[in-house]
Length: 158
Image (cartoon, rainbow, N blue to C red; front, side):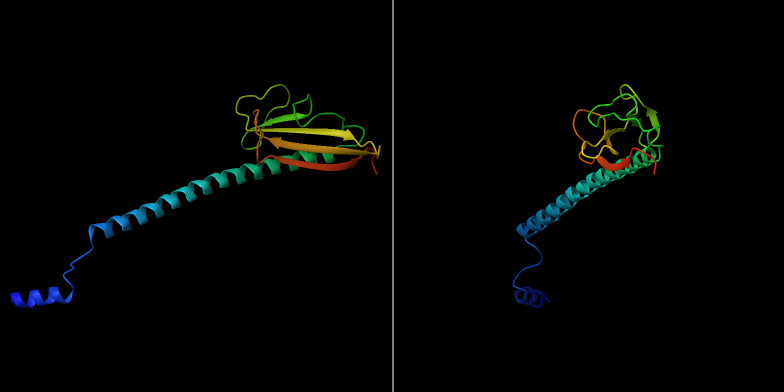
């Protein structure tokens, strides 16, 4: 019986499993793959959050643009405002759901988005107004996923 076992082990070259080096290399490859997948997962989450913020900002900008375009020309549509700072009557402070928290002054607690707009006449075409709307996050640094819209509007009703 012993002769049979010795003959089998010689037929397989004396190997009965993986060496320690092969096991360590395989574990290293698996660990590297898991680390790369974890990094891709974290990047995917960050990009999804940025896309969600950008989409919400664009929706809030479009909402304000439609409101401004629907005002009666010359009666309700006052000129002024700036996109860089919050001017009286030309800024809104909104929460994460787009609810209005305040309209003038500094950002109230809970502000997630700052919506600013400006209405200015065109020098070359005095009958046209340029309406600009920008939605950003509050703070000194610019938001990379800010939304900006620009449209033209006649000063007089058609």
